[in-house]
Image (cartoon, one colour):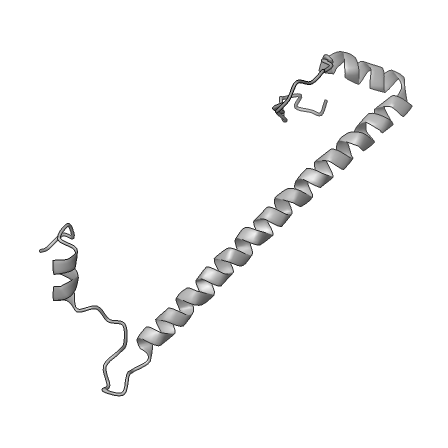
Length: 109
């Protein structure tokens, strides 16, 4: 329907449906000949595209919030690691020897 006239959308029916097939070139010709038809078709398509874009936006915002939350939690852990304990040593620092023995598949130089 829109230049560069490539296939943009797909659909998959979960139940039995009836479908109508239109050739894009003939549909465009008809829309040019009858502007009211073209306007109605573009308006309907715009509503569908807008709802899909909004759904995608909501998904991305959800992922962004999750990433920010994870990033915030990671920063808190880093701050905790950098905060010296009462004995003067940094917290949450694994002992290299115990790390190697607990993880035998780790490369040992």
